[in-house]
Amino acid sequence: MENLTLLTIGVTLLCCVLGVMGLHAYAVGRAERDALVDRLSHTGQLPAAGRRRRFRGFDRRLRTTSIGRRIELKLAATGLEITPGEFVVYALLAMAGLWLVASSVLAAFFGPVAALIGLWGTNAFLNWQRAKRTERFINQLPELSRILANATQAGLALRTAIAMAADELEAPAGEELGRVAHRLAVGESLDDALSELTDRLPSRELVVLVTTLVLSNRAGGTVVSSLRNLTETLEERKETRREVRTQLSQVTVTAYAVPAFGVAAMLLMNAVMPGALDRMTGAGIGQAAVIVSLILYATGFIVIRRLSRIDV
Image (cartoon, rainbow, N blue to C red; front, side, top):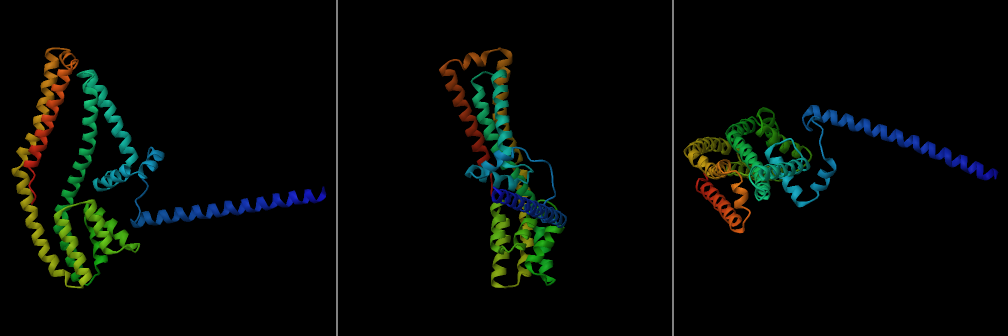
């Protein structure tokens, strides 16, 4: 009995010692982590703490799927401060709201149609944000090329020149080059870091710039003259793109006006004859007519957008 008592006391003391050591190790690790986060936040290598993220559990599970990874890549290209989980939840809420509004204002048949349009609209919104940010980045490429040329002419390494350009340029070029500089700082190759940039913001101008930098870095040639010539070319392409966009602005408005007129016509008809849409979609032939009309409107929108898309 006495040996059992001593054994119990010894095990208890050992557990207490291990518990104190564990708490000490946890406290030290937590303090080191907080110090590292604070240091990286002040140096710009880690974004400062922002708003509280919602739906964290759903977001973690979503990121493990292929759809979640594609959404995450698109969100990274748009620059929006939102996680894939938050985006999916908000998109589902928007679809449910459109379903209820369309069912109550128009007819029950238009509820699923409005939800599908909402699903297309969320994806179109991401593509629009991505194209908008890419366009802003393209407009900054001449200045970026000029900064890189001046930095390399002054004798700075290309990695240092990229980091300097990230500090001097505004968003989105500054943010994107900051990501490239951070990848280079942790040991990633220049080819991989710049390739990831072109995947996130695809454009011909950026591909040309990245190809020039990569080839000059590999071959060890004079990058200054190449960047000088590229700066002039990017300035000319910038002006050409602006002129083309101005000439096609009327066609772009027409592409969005055509389906808007169709929706306005349905609302006007339902306002003049209350319940007309409900009676029309109550029969099979009416539902088929609505579906065919929606397909025709979508086809017209896509065709007009295709015709107005000119690659410069």
